[in-house]
Length: 337
Ligand code: NAD
Ligand code: WQD
Image (tube, rainbow, N blue to C red; front, side):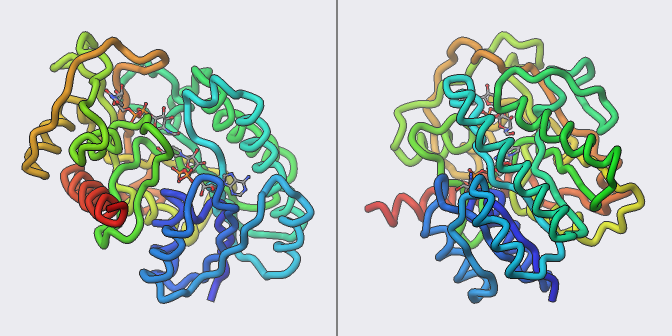
């Protein structure tokens, strides 16, 4: 059985990936100090996997503790999720973001090199494309300078990995550029746990429907799109999780590859609201507000390369993702009562 070290494995995308890994016969070692996740998620993973994983509460910026884990286990591959992820917060506290996201990455890369790990999977983001010239982006679309320190940490992360490969080719690396992951595990046992007021659209919608927020504000209805609201490529988190399992078996014709992880289809904010209302059969109060700083008009993934080379494509619909996110929200509201 192959052992996969998963940094940030108790987080939103990490927890779903751990479940997919166990489903496919891997043994995950979660390295996560739970700074942005909770024991409740570990409990959910335990129930979904019959406890077929280990968890270590280690800060990946603590190089000594991290190296000691690599020394203790024979690790076949590393999937690196652990990072801070809020665009707005990164503008307010850039140092915190650069420290955690870059030092964490450097430590993990050094450990992979030192302990001869064969494969490394990096959580990248569509943020590396910035505001693209054409709305659908290919992996070969030129990257643009990001709008936020968070975006820079992903942009620089990819650059660091590219530089490392130019000289030493130490291990195969796959950068997965996620578009907008949404939804939850259909069991309702794991899902997204936003801290405080959610920044992202779907958690804001589900919290509004649950009565935690009064109304959704749609940030801008004057964009040059058919209904005036922003368009994104929303992809079910379970599909995103499965892309990581594919990355582990990908034969690695090239030592470094990037893949778009989206559906290829854009959905506007207003379409998301209507879809939610029809899936949940609930009226969702919303108002239009001004555009949010740093938001782009539209982006979606071209997924031809992911289909042809990685052998991955999204299997679930946006409506299914909304249904699962709503189920998760209802489970959580129940457990808070
Ligand atoms: P998340 O915050 O839910 O998960 C990250 C996990 O990493 C958390 O459990 C946190 O406790 C842990 N962590 C953070 N810093 C750590 C450290 N120094 N040591 C140990 N553990 C640490 O985030 P997520 O949504 O699951 O995102 C996972 C990755 O995917 C991140 O790198 C993020 O930037 C990237 N990404 C996310 C999205 C998205 O929309 N969610 C989109 C594109 C890329
Ligand atoms: C989606 C759409 C908003 C909230 C972010 C990061 C990106 C990546 C994915 C990590 C936009 C609109 C939102 C609300 C709204 N993450 N919206 N009202 O901004 O596309 O991407 O997550 O790498 O880097 O920037 O996602 O969910 O915040 O917004 O109208 O209350 O919903 O304007 O059009 P975004 P989002």
